Amino acid sequence: QQQVKQSPQSLIVQKGGISIINCAYENTAFDYFPWYQQFPGKGPALLIAIRPDVSEKKEGRFTISFNKSAKQFSLHIMDSQPGDSATYFCAARGGGSQGNLIFGKGTKLSVKP
Amino acid sequence: ETGVTQTPRHLVMGMTNKKSLKCEQHLGHNAMYWYKQSAKKPLELMFVYSLEERVENNSVPSRFSPECPNSSHLFLHLHTLQPEDSALYLCASSQGGVGNTEAFFGQGTRLTVV
Image (cartoon, rainbow over all chains, first blue to last red; front, side, top):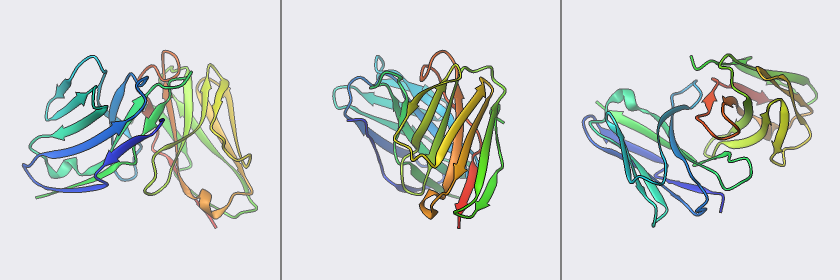
């Protein structure tokens, strides 16, 4: 119940295309859903986050879609650029007394020029 | 830079060695974390410190020993490690109560156990 399942494991998209990464969870106590971006040799950095009281959040080319009833959320990267090539992690917070982040396994995105 | 600094960036150690990883945060946060990142596995939370008190230990083997002398510094002491402990070890910090805000990560220490 503490798991966050992320797919796909890897993704190749052409420049200008849309990248879509999906995550699913079981624990309805989760109350905060961030996405992190990690470049090689760097630690993960917060990209965008959403709370379950909204169905969509958009920041520039990045959009989170959230489906509370299905317990799923996804990251959409519009007009994908080679500079977006990185590993993306979804996460969920809550479900325990300390409310720690539970991470998905990550998706390695490659955007081809 | 995220305001969380980890040293060293790379470490190679034998199974009988003792070494320590250091993390320092310059953000005024009151919670600090150690994560383990292995290939093709989720980020694994190892330890959580809130206000310098350990609040969580996720069944981590005793060969990993954390220390938090103050709210800005976090150490991970290593001894008699195994090759499967080779991974990227990430430190993170947050503010406003454990898990209540964005976690800021350091760049990690790439550990290789030989």
